Length: 428
Image (tube, rainbow, N blue to C red; front, side, top):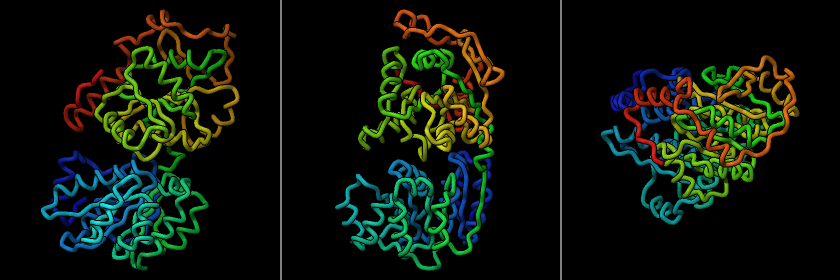
């Protein structure tokens, strides 16, 4: 894709864009034509650059008014988009004023700057954007020629639809609206019909065609305590970076305590962690300061962390759609990944639902630190005596082998090294 601004091509070359993803290849030309779009595409498919690149290509750097507004449901996602945008802006020969507006920012400083001049690209969360646009009447968003709603289904889930509606109402009829979402819920349809003018609907990588680069291993707990089976999983893998998901803060604590007690390099992120600290931890995760991240669904959407080789579902999420969001953290941008999930007999209908969504589940058990196929999920095995919790002495014998096949950690490190240069050495 050739852009009218040469610096964008230079940016793509330096960032390492050898080939556009399918989402980017299909979306960018339509955005550049000015079409309203509804894009249903899975997380990790390259959506952010699909709307940022055309925005930069059409930007008038010498015009000090708001030209694009991008709305995201979380501070983490808004910050991530801002970082991408600022990276592109560094290649521009002209200065580009990009500002981030989210809860937790310095509101007084934001107001002071807006009274002086307007940003050219605005990125923020619904509540703060609405506050500055409507309540304070300082952010002159009505001059924008494009409005992007990222992760639209998540925005609806978070109860921000009224805020987004208030923001959208200030734009002119000529504004181009771009809506990106992993799914398009029925409840979102009235909003889309209200604001989008004869939009083009693109369904790219629908849920039924879930990422084929992910191997989905399902392991039945049977009579084993979940902690014991989790211990077996950990000793059977040697991940480059693994995220362990649990449904509750209490279960996150159980998993994190176990990893810490057994000297694994781990960190825990839940909603109880203050935003500033959460932001710092995410940056450390990106630098590979940890090998295991234990988290609730706060990390299942909208946060791009490169190099995740394994997802472990200590608990299956209540909604199968969130299974897709969780496992979509790995297998991104043409890399492979492994998702390992614990399930119980009561989860059979849930597994039927996953398979109906096109997810190819492989049922496994663990023997001698290896994953072994189970022919059918209903296959009966000899009843085993319930296992007692694993004591420290036993755990010392269960430390992972340095020769773990098929070299998950080494393969991922080699792939990322080729893509983005030498990775920093792991700490701890």
